[in-house]
Picture 1: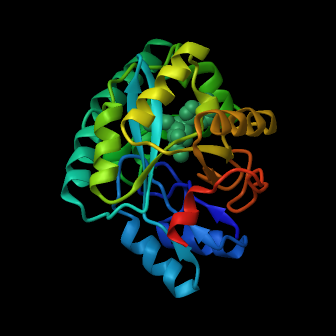
Picture 2 (picture 1 turned 180 degrees about the vertical axis):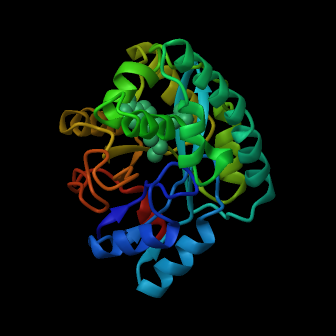
Length: 276
Ligand code: AMP
Ligand code: MN
Ligand code: MN
Ligand code: MN
């Protein structure tokens, strides 16, 4: 089993259309796949149909942006019904502030002497509703201001950097509820990326469990190998099931290819076993 349950298409901030991500996942040996675009399920039917044609297992997915304790957390939903109205409405509300936020980011970058980034990012976003920091990062690279998208985040776009605009996403309880209402399981995405204290992490995981959350990502393209071990221990301590996903966005961006991660530690229960 080569499960890759986290990646992106042009429906959010990925480079390839859903059908092309499906073909790429299949070509790289993925046997169970989920496309998890940010705050949008518009690519799910195309992804599922293409996976079926290829004979590759598929779970409908989504990655929801949440604000918890003044910071952004991502919650992946797996095996959701993409036609669930509660999920669709919740995601639409979650997306709704992106346009104004992007304009504010553009104004901040203008003030730093970097003009035209909002317009450039908008052109790169195939889905204008889903304009994201990734599109700004790619634009800053194209315009020669940064040497890589990582460099763009490190210097301008990460929390606390001069191009960052704080944003209020959805509530953890709402995101988990929409996923559950759509018949899916909620998974805390890449916990190693969050800048919480140990006490805050315990509170986050405790609240997630109280809401019915059962799983976290352990082996993800957004973790270092040290973090695979650290969050495997967290999964053991809290009794979480574990998920695995590349968080693939684009060729040459990020650390890993679709299907290219090591397996989960063998003592952890994979979240996908319930659907096999
Ligand atoms: P947004 O939803 O607009 O805030 O954009 C979030 C996206 O930016 C994430 O899904 C990643 O694709 C990317 N991202 C966030 N932080 C970083 C980072 N430190 N380095 C590289 N990419 C990042
Ligand atoms: Mn992304
Ligand atoms: Mn994420
Ligand atoms: Mn992601």
